Image (cartoon, rainbow, N blue to C red):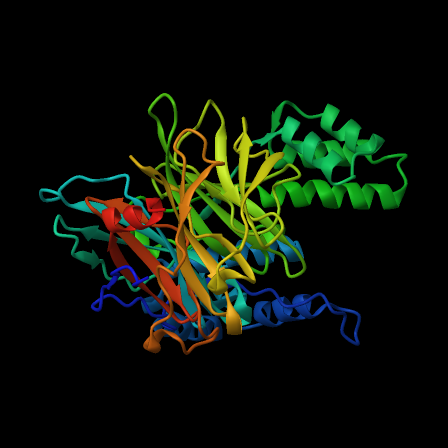
Length: 490
């Protein structure tokens, strides 16, 4: 059978740019030196011992060299000074210049996409104002990989014209990670998660009983301090660690509304994602009351284990990050349907790392039910398969772009068609790949791979962004009718 005609947009190439940097805290270790002081304390003492002219000249050099690389360098330095001052217990009244210099010594630049940029996902943007007839503005998420193979989440924007021509807006030169906001936690969530982790004990029970149904970190910390008396030290340490781990893994961040979408970087902040936030699958979700929320399921990696987590936003300026729970909230590749079905949230998953599953739940953050709907059958997917983003609704059924792994661990893209009313029923699947690596897409950090995390249907076209070889990203298009015809034929 002949391959489906797929058009690769030759003028679109999103490649990693090592010049895109963020400023991160850099806090030297707590190792004890020969004189009994910590390395961190020694560095602080050296900076405090500088005379004022040296402070001014050193700070001047720093500002001259780095100010043009960050939107508000003073704010970055002050923030990192606050972290350092809190850690060392610094209470001295210092000049503004010395505070900034301390912040500079405890900062470093991180090139967010020095190693790779790929695995894109696309959704229609919240703001569709100011467009021409038939145009659609989109937001694309990307997996950016930097030093140490740590992944973060970047964004781009663009416009799809009525004739399917695609324009991707140029990325702005600055990048920033936003500000962490105070988060209110749900006590029921903490209780359920503690039982799942096997960490519920009388001390943990007492702490939860001492906080409100919704509580913030200071209330949790106060309850831990108040109730730890009389409890053995090991239990206090272990329980406190788990509770802080849960709280730190669920948070909110905000970016200035005036910043460009390409400047916003969601960089790992919680312990579950300390080694990376991978492969966001965005979906524009319409609730039963018409409210639109953008969800993004992604894989958090802490250096030892992976954990699916959820991003929630309605404006791509403020984001809520949350852990998922339930026996089916595991492994990579959870992708939400864009609306509820029969009053429930529905998602695709790959619980066993090999097959495609359908998941259902009344709660978007709790997943217990799953059914296998597809196993590898074709030669190009025999090792494993999975979804490439959230299902797309068509009159013929739910269109799902998939990926399959074949000989030489080559990744190819395929497609499924699921019944609209009963998505556990597979109407058809491609017997041949939809997209395979082109000759100029084979070489890279991970050879012979094409991969996508989410597509769009605009007009009569499937707009399919994809990453290749862990090098960069491109966009392809295919006529929806051609694809559906192939999926529905006997």
